[in-house]
Each structure stands twice: as structure tokens, then as C-alpha cells.
Length: 588
Image 1 (cartoon, helix red, strand yellow):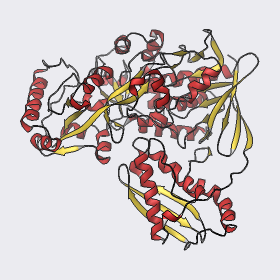
Image 2 (cartoon, rainbow, N blue to C red; image 1 turned 30 degrees about the vertical axis):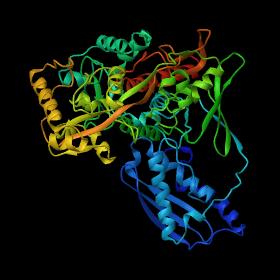
Image 3 (cartoon, rainbow, N blue to C red; image 1 turned 60 degrees about the vertical axis):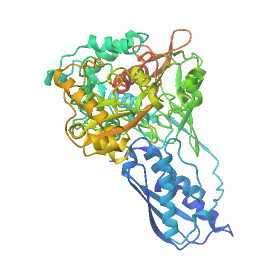
């Protein structure tokens, strides 16, 4: 089946769009390089494995570039796979900038293309590039009932719900692919009183979910929004089932009283899993998606009602007319200038965010006087591998892993809220720690295989072997594991009062560790909404025709987001925004 993508994402199709233009340019350029026509292949080591490039050459131009690298899907490496080939063809050189946030994958793409060029007898260094005149932008008007800005989890959820309600829906996405920060989520979705909890005899309640979320967020969240989040969570789990994305595995997350975080059956990363299901549903419903298309301004009528969006791509200026608009552009965790405006102490931290999380939607909303809430509340995640910015999911600790410092000792309750655990890591010597687990935990949580593939896991045949590789005193680490395993057997952690994620000890070799430190992870603040996902103005009234969901919004998480609540947020409030936008489009 074919997803109705109106703006191509950059691979050979993007190259094909430029072929005629490039051929004409090259033919008229006396200094154009002379190649041996053909298709050539090159390989380079990427983020998580080999990246392979196939380069087609005419006698005078790079005609097309096709790149494959399945393991680059972790994080935002796949954006480099999608975007760089088209850029290389357009500029006729590999001397191009890396995609922000995907430097390792970008370098791999460039080197793979260079290898292919060298196999064709071409010196990549001599291809200094050509300035290809861009065609004048054309204008296009698109009419729909509901316009969704942002193709992450919240935007796709909203679009699906609005379409299922019988409305004509379009999605605008500024990146070359759908998913946004949702693609990077590895944990799961919090939900209470679900059928899966009941099947597994897990005692939980909506009220406990509310209490945990309020407490975890410093009791500053909007209780009405938190209540809707908790009350709607079981129904949202059932809805995911209905679109082919069941989350039957239930585990612990930091700050949760009970086992509440719902995950794919095999424990794989929840983000990529859900994004794939959402994309499949978009295809099934024939929802048009405009990739590489950046929204710039809302269209507002004389009565102050939002009636559409202006947007732009590399070749077109768009006017998207709608009867209602859903804003789902995500947060601003990839915009250091913006988040350090509110939290200067975060300057220099790595970020786990997709490069598209730059706060564009917040800026657009402010132009039409949308109110902001909790904008200074920015979360750092405690377990981020610093060289790759890969976030190690909380599910690893929820399934029984521990944190140890460079001396090999535990130093905190690993299942505390993210702010508390992050502060504890920062307080350690040199500001880092190791997350330690065993073979049994690895086999029970598929998400770990992504960390292994991406070469951020250290393995030891024994705990002493692992200690040696980490430059930790083997006797100290062995004693730490022995003490921890005894605490698990006794069901009592006298050292740090941990009482969740203790169902299994760490006693099955081999053993593993990942070196981690905190990184910028989630922006809890954003535009203010009510329980119907209506955007609230600075005057305190809903802005007619405008709805919002996901990380673009504030008020749901307070000053600290509990792991598993972001996925709950995008699914639950995405559905609410889609439903509200559909009613508004009908005039209800």
C-alpha cells in the first residue's frame, strides 16, 4: 500500500526530481566532471551497522544516490538516510553538512557515497559542488476539514481519530519522515485498570495513577488534565489494540507505585513500534501527508478563529485551509538556545531529542496570543549514553537493573523519579554511572538488543570480568551484586529503600553495563490547553478552531515527567484533540 506523501523524503525519488535540472546544468557546464557511467556501491560503518550506498553516474553528473542502513533507525539516524542522498545529488558533492543530531549516521552516509565514487575512479575531494539554480517557488492551496501540524505520535493519533470520524484530514510535517520524538521513545505507555493488568493480577487504580503523576511532577500539574490522562488510559490501550498496536507487557517505571507501563509483547522499543502502526493506519485511511513542509503561520479570520495554516517546502508556498487545526509539533528539547533561555544550567548537555524538536509550534502559537504554562520545566533523563545520545529506557531498571558509580557501588534508589535519579548521577565522581544487568534481563527485554547493536554495551563473562573492563575494583562490584541479590531475595532494600523492579535478581552470566549520564530529554511546558485539548489564549479563553496535543502542550507533567506518561500523553490527548477538532469542523 502507498502512503500519500506529497513531499518526497529525499532518497532516489528526490534525486529523480532533480535529474532533469541537473542534466541540463551539467550539459551546459564546460568544467563538469567526466565520469564512467554506471551504478557503483560503497559501504561504511554506521551508527549500528553497515550503511550501503548505491550511486548512479552519467558521464557528467551524479544521477541518483540510494542508501540503506536498517540499524540507523535507532534515534534519528534514519533521517540522515532519508535526507542526505537528495542533498548530495542536488549539490553534486559529498562536501555537505551533517544532519543535526545524526552526526554518526551522516558521516556514514557520506563515507559510503565516497567509497562508491572511489570505486568509479572518482576523487570525492575534487567534487567541490555546483550551485544549482532553484526553481521559483510555486503556490498551492490545499483544502481540508482538519489540518494537523506535526507528524509525531500525537499528530498521527489526532489525524486517525478525525479521519475515523468522517472528516478530510491532512498532516504537515517539516522533517523528511514521520515520528518525531515518538520514534525515540523506548519505554512504554502508562495506563491504569487495563485489561492487561487484570489478566496479570496487577492491582492498580486510576486514582493511584493520578496521585503518582501529581507527586512526581511536584504537585504543580493541572489536576484536571492529569485526571483525564488517567481516566482515559485504559480505553486508549484498547484503541491501540484496535489499530494493531497491542501493549500487553506490563512493567514498572520510576515514580510509579504499581506495574503500569505497557510495552510491546517482546519488550521492544515502544516508539518505533507505535509509529509503524500509526503510519500503516494513515495509509489504510488514505490520509495525505506533506513531508519536508514547514508550517510558518496560522491563518486567522476576522473573528479570531483559526482557519488554516501557511507552510513552505523547498519548492512551494502552501496555504492549507481547514475548519479546525491541531497543533502537534512537539517540544523544544533540540533547541539549546531556547531551553537555555529558561534553564541556563543545561548548556552543554547532550539531548535525546529528534532534531525537529525546536519549538516552532510554540513560537507560532505565541504570535496569536496563546498562553504558555510551565515553560521553564525541562526534564533531564538520568540514563543517556553520552557519545550517541541514546537514552537507555527506564524499563531496564524496571526489570531489575541497578546503577553503580565508578567505584562500583550503588548510590540511589534506581526507581526514583527522573529528577532525583539524575541529580544522584550528577553528584557522583566525574558525574557518570553504569547501569548493570545480566543475561536474564537482556533476554526478557528486546530493547536491549538495540543498545548492543549500537555498541554502547560492555559485556563480561563474569561480574569480575565486567569490572575489569570498566576499570572498577572487581571485589567491590562483586560485593555490590551480592548485596543487591540478597536484598531481592529478602524483598527489602535496606540501603536505598527501593521496592519496585525487584522481581528478579542479577545472577545469570554474562553481565552487562552501559555508561550513562543525564541528558536533556523532555520539555514539560508549552501551550496551555483544557481537557478538550483547546488551546487557551492569554486572555483565558479558548482560541476558536485551534487544538493541541503532545509535547507542544504544558500542564500535564508538572516539573518532572514520570516515565511512560509521554506515550500516554500523545495517544490520549492526540485522540482528544482529533475528536475535538472533528466536532469543531462540523460546527458542533
